[in-house]
Figure 1 (tube, rainbow, N blue to C red):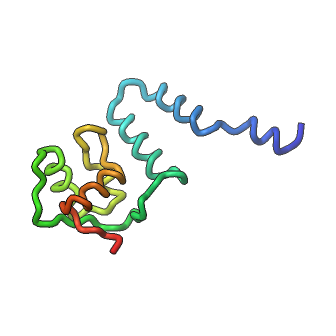
Figure 2: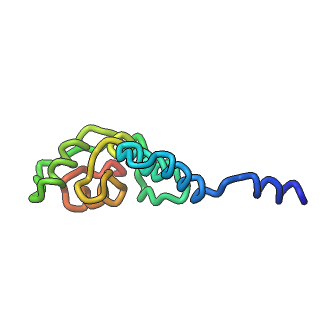
Figure 3: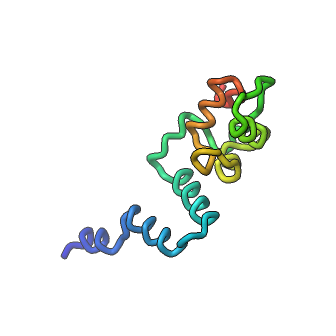
Length: 115
């Protein structure tokens, strides 16, 4: 067996590693959310939509009609993108995602930190 083959066999692929961690976590919802955020933030293939972890999210004067959007925009105001993705809940998906940040910017609830 070549060194390369041995190395590949010795490594867990990402999916297997995530499944092992999820099994070990069990029903701890906070740990599952933390694992999901960690995976999303640290995955090289994640679509960041041009956001950087240190971009600061700033609210505008426009107020969302839906309560869960209003709550997440209020909570995200003044946070960095990385902090918001770790701590801001999103009513439908559990955690704040890049797509949610982009939506809030397009709707005029947050200023675009990329410009």
